[in-house]
Length: 152
Image (cartoon, rainbow, N blue to C red):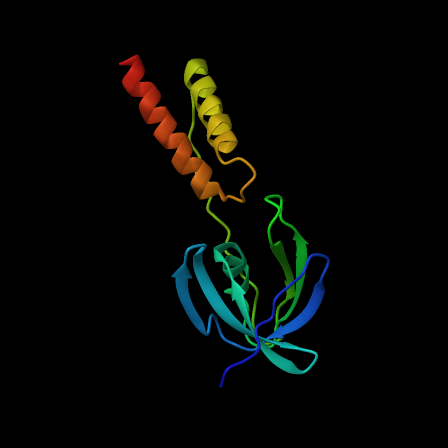
């Protein structure tokens, strides 16, 4: 059975109830990975296609969990950025994906300055596009490797 697709517009606040237990489908296209969830909105079932960021939130919820989908302006100008808040179902628990912080003890002032520089440059290199901690960390580590090679 093909469900109608729920598409948010800027300014939308949609109350929904999660039907599927995890994504009902997944794949990838030119925009990246997508995850199809089944939601009930005002008693009507819909397919909702989540990107990786939204999927990281939704995958921790069980069927029956209430979620609010909000359509926000996209800083890039095209489409909307979807934010999700939710209340877990009585029989489940919400466990949105939270990255484990990496703790490193820096004992040298010069090393600390290089690390701060790498984080700043990595974040600036992303521009206005949304990003996660992992992407900034990956870019920072590449910059630190390059700096180490230059310094010998």
